[in-house]
Length: 182
Length: 198
Image (tube, rainbow over all chains, first blue to last red; front, side, top):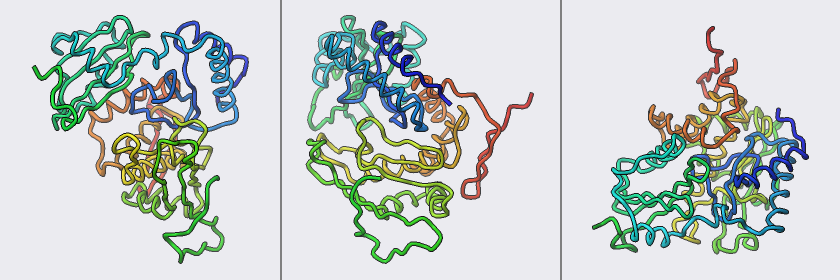
């Protein structure tokens, strides 16, 4: 069983903030097969245990309260996922501005490669057609068509190695053309 | 438990003497906390149990609950919107609102939501049965939940994806021991978590 020390939870929160890796902690089951960023959150959500216990619950609350106090003091930092993630139209715009053919993509690290592989497993038989590296926000975009010809863009965050951040789907009936169509 | 209790789908249900009373639990959407939901989430326990019963694995979980081996409970909503469920010892809890699926922004997909509620209830029920505490056990829960949801055993590639998801989730799984010596019987199937032979 996890040994909980509320001082440790606060210290970990402060350390994570300094390392630009602050999280939103929960105790229980989240969608682990989904991207790390959950809509409406500021930071990535991470579960510390699936079995609920007063200790782990207290750890989560103490950690999150510390992060909340830092947010009140400093505001939402520029490195927070919510600040860096473009919206659906923003991703299309960025890919239209600059993208390369997907076969030319090479992962920059083992973590980036593993995150890329998790993303590809969600594409089924399809594969991205283009990719784009957003240096200003440390993000990678992968765009292409799914089997039903709807568009898909996945966002990979490489600020701290590599993690699958988010994805967007674009039905063809609403988006008759994509930047990668040409 | 929270939420309203309303028996709408199974008016003839009578608690079996000696067992815990089954709660017919209908969940009403807390529109005041989730204003983007303009429809009412309304599922009875009977509907959720019927959804779980569509697979032998789900049936085994429901049977275990009916035999008081485990408890299956529901929460209408949780203060943390990212939490889909949790377990405490032999009790699995599903947070109804956090399993909502949308067909388009603001439009609840009722069928997919019910399916996701059932999946989470099966997932937490498997943990409540005692399947947990090691990497292998956690993978078993995922594999069995997949089998319940999709209706077939996951392929080796799909299991590889599950393990990649578990690694990406962080210390919640990566800190677990690889295996523990335990076994659980589930609907006639024995799930073994054997110690690796030395």
